[in-house]
Length: 333
Ligand code: AMP
Ligand code: TRP
Image (cartoon, rainbow, N blue to C red; front, side, top):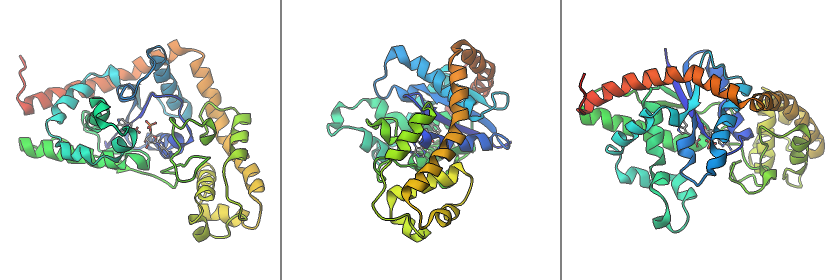
C-alpha cells in the first residue's frame, strides 16, 4: 500500500491555512493510503517555545487532527519526539546534504534575522530533519501546503543522494501532494502575505479554536478593495484579497471558484461576506467543538496517542535496522 507521512508543528494554534492547505486533504487521503501524521515538536523548538506550554500545544494539535476527522484506528498520530529514529536518521542524512542545498531554502532566509551568524543550527538544519521524518517510514506521498514544496524537493534530493552514495535503491523519492485550490491561504489583513501562526495580528487568521463570533468579526474586518465584487475569474486573479476570500469560500463549500464568482458577481462584498461567515461557521464550528471536547480530557488524548504510536515505532525501528546495515554501523545482531 502507498504510504503517507505528513506533519504540523506544535508552535501554537492551528488556523484555516493549516486546515485547508493540509489537514482537510489528510482526512480524505486516509481512505486510500497507510498514513502517519506527526505533531512536529522537534521542529517547533527551532524557535524558542515555552517549556510549560509545549506539551499542551502538542496535545492540542493532535486534538485538531482527531477533531478534523483523522481516524486514529486507520492512521498513526503521535509526537515526532516519541519516535527517536527521526533524529537518528536525521544525523545520517546530514552527511548527504551539501550546504549549498540548504543555502537555497527560502524559508530559512525568511525566518532568519538579518544577522545570520546569530541563528541556531536547528533552524538551518530544519529541512534535513523533515527529510528524515518522511524517509524513516519510506513514505511515498507527502500532502502539504504550497509553502513546503521546496523542502520536499530537498527531501527527494537527499533520498537520491543517499541511494547513490550507497549504491542502493532503498528510499523511495517522496511525491509532494499539493491538493485543491487553497494551497496557500493568505492573511485576512494582507493578500500578499501567507496566513501564519506567527503573524502578530490575530485578525490576520481564523484559528481552529475561534468561536462563531470571532469568525464573524474577523471575516467582517477582512481587507477587500473598494471595487465591486469581481465579475469574472480573470478579474478575480488580479485582486489578491478578493481571490483569497473566494478561494476560502469555494474550498469550504466544495465548489469551483468560478461558481462562487458567478453567484456573487454584481453583489456587494458585504453580501458575500455574510454568506462566507455562514459557510465558515457551518464547517468550522463542529471541529472547534470536538477539539474543545478532546482538550477537556488531555489524559484521553495521551491514551489515544499511545494507541497508535506503536505502529510508527514498529516501522521506524525496522527501517532503522536496515539503514544501519546499509551505512555499516555496528550492531550485535
Ligand atoms: P505548519 O503549521 O507550518 O507546521 O504547517 C503545517 C501544514 O499546513 C503544512 O503542510 C503547511 O504547508 C500548511 N500550511 C501552513 N500555512 C498555510 C497556509 N497559509 N496556506 C496553506 N497551507 C498552509
Ligand atoms: N515543516 C513542515 C511545516 O512547517 C512540518 C513538517 C515537519 C513536515 N516535518 C514534515 C511536513 C515532514 C511534511 C513532512 O509545515
